[in-house]
Image (cartoon, rainbow, N blue to C red; front, side):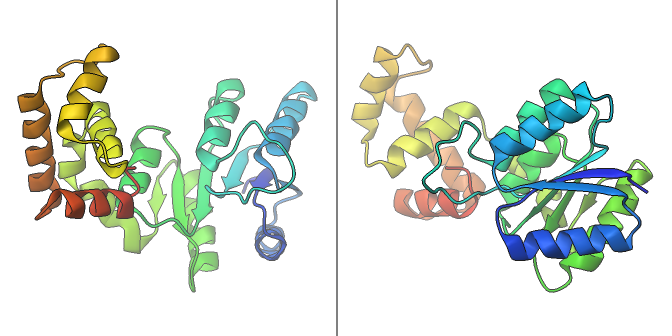
Length: 221
C-alpha cells in the first residue's frame, strides 16, 4: 500500500473522509492542502527531504477567495508536480463528469485514476488505489465510456478556438479577420464554416447554438 499521500482538496468534510479512508487502508503519512500552491510546496519540500509522496489525490476545481494563487486548478497542480516528480501516481477525485475532461486527463495528463464523487466513491477510491498499485488505470464506471468515444479524437486545438469564439458571440466573418490578424491558419471563411459543420456532425448538434451548448456541457470550452 502507499505510505505517503498528498491530498489537494479545499473542503474540510471531504478531507476528513479521505484521511479516514487512507488511515483505514494503512497509509502511514498523510498531508493535505486546501490550495494548489500549498500542495506544490509540500511536494517540493518532500522531495528536498528525500521523502517524496508516492501518491497525489486531488480535486479539479478549487473555490476562489481572498487569497491570490498561482495554481488555480487541479490540472495545473498535476502538471506542476509532474514537472518535479514525473513518476508520481495521480488519483483525481472530483464531481466533474464531463467526458472530454476525463479523456483529456487520462490521455494528456496521464492520470492513473479518475474517481467521481458520489454515493459509492469511497469504495471506488479504495479500488482505484489498489488498481494503481498493480500498474492499472481506474475510471469510475459511470465515466468509463468517455475513453471509448473516438469522436473526441477528431477535435483539435483549432476547433476549441472556433467554439470559444462562437460562444463569445463572434461571427464567422469576425473570426476570419481575427485569425488573419493573429496569423492562425487556415483562416478563410469557407474553412471555418466547414469546421463548424464537421463539429455539428461530431456532436450531433442541430444548430450552432446547440453546438456551443453541447461544447460547454462536455467541458470543451
